[in-house]
Amino acid sequence: MRGRRRASVNVALAWGIGLLTAGAGCSFGPKVLEKSHGRYNEAIRLVDEEQLLRNLVHVRYNEIPFRLAVSSIAAQYELSGSAEARPFFDVPNQSGPIFRTCTKILPDVAVSGANRPTITLIPAGSDSIRRFLTPISVDTLVFLQSTSWPIATVMRLWVERLNGVPNAASASGPQREFVPDFARFQRIVYLMQVAQDLELATVDVETRDTVVGGPLPAASVTASAAVDAAKNGLEYRPNGDGSTWSLIRKEHHLVVDVNPWALEHPAMAELVNLLNLEPGRLQYNVVVASNIRDPLRSPNPPSADLAVMTRSTAQIYFFMANGVEVPPDHIAEGLVRPAVGPDGLPFDGRAVTAGLFEVHASKGHKPPGTAFVAVKYRDYWYYIDDRDQASKATFALVLQLAKLDFGLQEPTGGPFLTLPVGR
Image 1 (cartoon, helix red, strand yellow):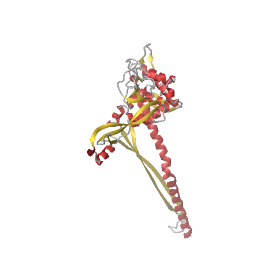
Image 2 (tube, helix red, strand yellow; image 1 turned 120 degrees about the vertical axis):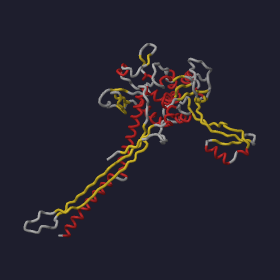
Image 3 (cartoon, one colour; image 1 turned 90 degrees about the vertical axis):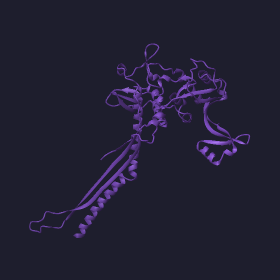
Image 4 (cartoon, helix red, strand yellow; image 1 turned 45 degrees about the vertical axis):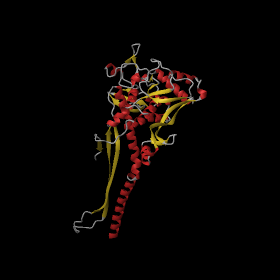
């Protein structure tokens, strides 16, 4: 009889331990990464998309954009459990002894788990905001041109003026009651896209040597000086006289190379004319410049350089915000003042970003079923249509590349938030 009870106890304990082991194998260890990684990834992606769209809507209403980035997620998982076998006593017989041995064993198993993530959020610091307001550099422009994105998209977003021709320059800042000039620029980028697709011309990167110091006596160029120069991207080279050296920096330059057979192509001829370039050249230097005069208003001699005035990430936000639809009642309330054209009619700012980016506005308890990403603001849902491939592509490009200038910074004494999710 004792052997049977002992066997029952062992079976109950083994059953309980088996449940704990199975639970741990299914929910923790490598399995928990498989179940949680994708969800965290999707959550952060959705947060970034909604934050960018919300900032664009705020900018449309002349309000300040703000970025709160997820710096880290520390997920803590806990598994606890217990298993025991409880004796079960029959009701004692009145004629028998008061205390009797147990005749049955009842198993008791308890398993519990917990997931307590700690999320660290960092607001944009002064360095990030400074870069957010600073036009992109030549290196960033080189990086952009090397991507597979259409050149027309990159130019419309990141270029303010091209050889003086404005790309809705008045629309890349706070909203003004002024109709921007953008028709010529849109025609130019269309022709540039044609030239790229037909391989009439290509944008290439050339590495050129620039002398930044010298000539120096050969004796002054020591091994330690050469190492220090290399750390800063510089190099000492001997001059032709054999007795002096110069300090050289390798710089990357953008150039437009024109195929010889494309010189007489109608698209190239129109492009050269609109940009006021010297006709018949096989190469044009791309230079970053500011305060370039519009050739239509201030005629200049044709140039061998293609002068580019770049935009900052902040200007890109303002430019894209023109594509946000403003409900009529918000215009009537004066929340947004549209520009007035020469004909006296209100100008729809969405014409500035037509074919590039558009955000719709809709009223309701929830966003439309065709919304790719949506945020609610002032009783309206602002959303990008899931079927609008151009807007989705532009949105994805800006979302990724804006981090180059408005990225995460290590906290330097400023506030940051660490939010533990409690029990």
